Length: 205
Ligand SMILES: Nc1ncnc2c1ncn2[C@@H]1O[C@H](COP(=O)(O)OP(=O)(O)OP(=O)(O)O)[C@@H](O)[C@H]1O
Image 1 (cartoon, rainbow, N blue to C red):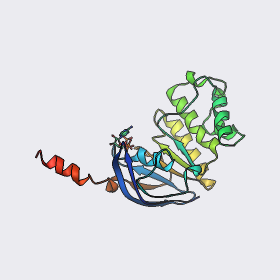
Image 2: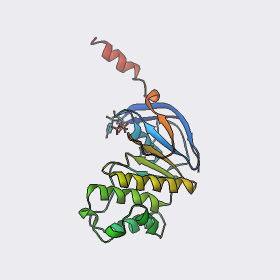
Image 3: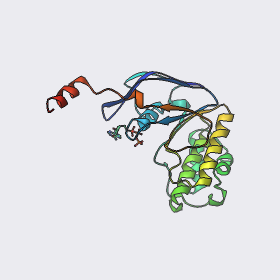
Image 4: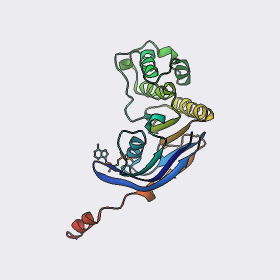
């Protein structure tokens, strides 16, 4: 599935952060989102996932095609690893959690309550959630936080599998994931400060 973003402008906390964004992510491709802290990468992913509306612009397809892996893992602490995945599989209408368990090597941990997992194990479970959604567009925000080198490779392999099935992915990350991907530096799209704000600041110069 192809994603097309046209003339998008987005804000966080009522303040514009990015504007004039247009790009495409074809089926089977990953796009790495780059830019300094605070630029608006998370805000962009939140907007694409439907958690907040854009200021202007078009996003095609809509949120129903998106699976969002945010900073928080979104786990149910008292449910086991398998129960967490089954819960999300039911939410998204999928039945089989086996591919997700295998992709992130979670079989040995399947009966453990999520609350008892280490940070990296929790992150692996959070990412395994993407697999059970069955959704074609993965939106991933700093997905490798807490992952060791081996787990980063398992994650990269899961992304490659997803792309090979015709999905696509947008990934905000500061590290090299060793996934064949296009790279979009969002810095040129930083929203210009409102004129009134400039005038206000200049009054103190
Ligand atoms: N909950 C919030 N309320 C208001 N403003 C926020 C909130 N979260 C973030 N911001 C601001 O919105 C802007 C964009 O933040 P965002 O998290 O999208 O950046 P980012 O590029 O993902 O940064 P990082 O690389 O640090 O994760 C920043 O100026 C940030 O301070």
